[in-house]
Length: 445
Image (cartoon, rainbow, N blue to C red; front, side):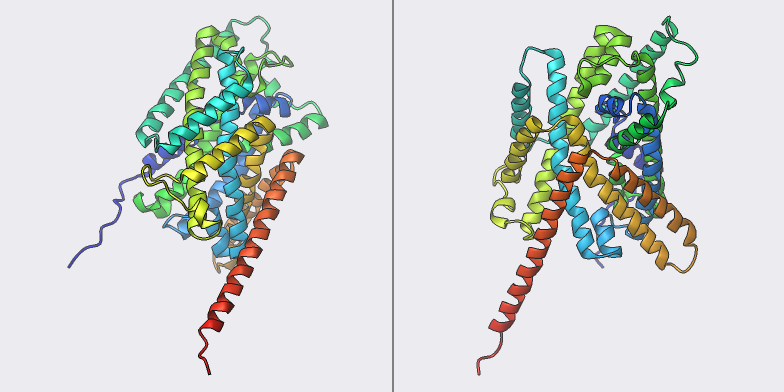
C-alpha cells in the first residue's frame, strides 16, 4: 500500500521560538526609535512595553486560532471562517496594504541611512538607487535564504550586545547621570505626555509585526497543538523585553530634549554618541543591510500576493496573474510595486508610512481577537477566560488604532473603502456570470 508523504514534524518549541525571533528581528525597535522618541516625548520604553500588552493578548488569540486551524492560516482565514467571508476579505485587503507599504518604508529608511555615509548625495538619488536595487534583484529571482537570515539575526544580536555594553560604559563615566536619570524614560509629567505616549504606542506596534508567521509552520512542528501557541506568545514576549532594554539605554544616553540629526536613523546617532565613529558605522551598515534584505523580501511577498489574487480572478488576470518565463517571478507586480515605492518614498515620511502599515496590521489583529472571542462564545465549556482575553486584545488594539496618525487613518480608510467596492463589484459580476451561464444552459423548446 502506497504511503502518502508529508512534511516531517521535527520543529520543537525552541526551534519555533528561534524562528519567531529571527522573523521579527532582534533589532526590531531600532528603525522606528527616532519616530517613537519624537511622538512619545522621549518615552520610547513605555511605548514598547504598552504595545507589548496589546500584542500579548493578540498573540494568545493567534495561538488559539492556530490551534483551531492547525494546517496554517492567517488573519483573513480566521475572520472569514469564524465571522463572515466578507469581513475576512476586508481583513485580507488590509494585509495587502501592509505588504505594499513595508518595502516602501524600508526604502525610506535605507535612503536616510545612506545619507549618513554620504550626506552630499540627494535623498531622491538614494530612493532611485534602492528602488532599482530591490526591483532588479527581485525581477531576477534573487532571494535570501533562511540560513542567511539566521546568520544576519545572530550578527545583529552581537551588535545589540556591543551597543548595550557601550551605553552602560558611557553612562558609568558620564558626569550628568543621576538616580533620577534612570527613571526619566518611565515617568510621565502630565496629560500631554500621556496623550503623546498613546500615539507613540500605536506606532510601536511596528516592532512586533511578524510574530504570527510562526503559525505557517504548523505542518512541520512537533506537537503543534501546544507548541505553536506557546511559541507565538513567547516570541512576542521576548521581542518586547529585548526591545525595551535596547531603547531604554538609548533613551538614557541621549541628552533629554536634544534633537537628532536625522529622526529616521536616530538610534544610529545614539550608537555614535556612546561608541564613537566605529560603532556608528557598524550599526548604520548592519541595519542598512538588514533593511535591504527585509525590503526585498517584502516587495517580492507583495508581488506574489498580487499574483495569487490575479490568478484567482480578484484582480485582472492578464496583468497580475502573469509570470516571467525565465525567472518564474511575477515581473509585472514587482515593477508595479517598485513604482509605488518610488512615488510613496517621495511623498510619505517614515513616521506616516509606519502608521499606515500599522493601520492594516491593527485591523488584522482586531479581526483575530474578535474571531477568537466569537469562537470562545460558541464553546459550551471553559469559555470565560478565552472570551475575556480576546476581548481585552480587541479593545487594546482598537485603542491603538484610534491613536494612529489622522492622515494614516484617512488613507487607510480610503484603501478599505476601495476594497469594499471591489468586493461588491466582484460579487455582482459573479452573480451576473452565474445567471448568464444558467440561462445559456436551459434547453431550447
